[in-house]
Length: 325
Image (cartoon, rainbow, N blue to C red; front, side, top):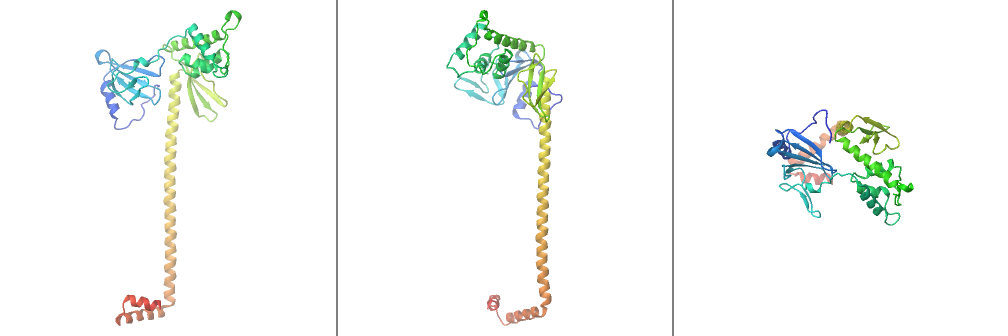
């Protein structure tokens, strides 16, 4: 989700879903926009009071756009889905499962330490530090890897971390310090936009985009990659997708030109084949004419014989049998 410099192209005829959105949103002002908890759901609130409606943008699975009223009753949506195992459904005229949203809360030291120790206490070689930390944070494996590396720890480590800081073994505390620093950075993003960057290869092709956490990318560029920094993460995302869109448009034009060129070449080959066949027919006709010209008297005699036979009452079938004999 990002801002744009200009409105993108849109079809001449809007879909039924777009018409539904226009009916409820067009005359209302955007009052608020926010992320719900730590989940990949963005809520946009239009209007206020009894005229309030909300658009929920889901950035997971196949993606979704859900229009709800102030009580989160679904008025319309792009894609219905349900999870019978969890007892939730996102469907028209149903209450949106707002209770499933993951709330963002600060990582508590003792709870994190106990959960991490329990995860790493299993059979040796089964769980890495990265695999153990990722589900405890709720920000995804890339953020877990980012915090682990900034703490100076090995993400592939499989042994329990030391937690006795009095004895000089402060691995857990070092990791927690980096996690708390990341969570503090997230809090500051609500008031101050984060910087962003795009990873570019040596051919100038864009590969991915990501925010900069205190000037450091969450994932370091790989070999042969460089980094383009932007003042805000929104600028980086807008530039990334603008370039992708331009490349896609250029690719479509190239494909259309190639298809037209192939069609033209096929027409040329067909014309050439037809001309060649006509020339062959002309050659055969000329040879037949030359044969008749050189044997004109014999041809006249044959024609006279046919006329006499027909006058004598012979049928065309009798003539064919006579000629065959």
